[in-house]
Length: 298
Image (cartoon, rainbow, N blue to C red; front, side):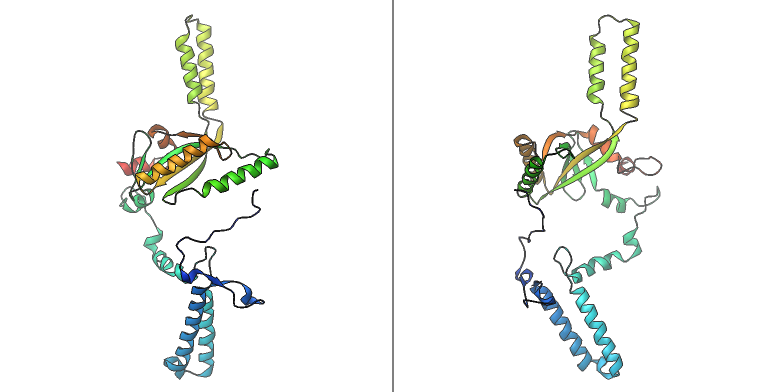
């Protein structure tokens, strides 16, 4: 039976400090708190008490000492709070300090600029003939065109089956392989239709001018109108493994799911280099229409 709600499961590598305890049966203390949060708040409170009684702060007047204690408690309780991912706010301070310098928040993409910073974001070293992507961090990726089963016209039983299938699927996904879903709005794919028209043209024995004009008209409609003026939504799946073996295991899970059931993924198509590059152009094209990815590779 599909769940009505979902939550973030506990991490497998959680330590003793991540376990939650309840201090009271009622009031604000009834909410479970991790042991690390209690240690942080307790240690911060003791540090403030020591500074107010035994450090240079104790030489100030009562008003200043009171203001210092209030300010210190507010800081301790704020940084001792928990984020949505069950982490202390104090753990985000190093990332904040690394983000504060203006250089860390700006990436220049001028023609005369050093491309190293931009390359660290793009992170693509090579796209092989079969579509295999080599990232700068040592990972490997493969892009698939996917078709799902979601629809506004689903019956309740079908919706429940799809949710159950998704729930069971994500339980067996390897954590060493990232699953990145990319949704774009692009011109409709007309490769098969254009190839079919070409086969008809080659098989035409009677080269009547009217038939040739009719085929040319159909070809123009397919390429200029359907393939150019009528965009549609395309969904891609990028599998990025930390190694080739991790990518292979992720691809095996994807193929097994596609072959075993159509509830989650109805159809998958692995893209080669000629199909991956147009998809990447959606993200790596500047305002003037120049491809940043090709400029970087050059």
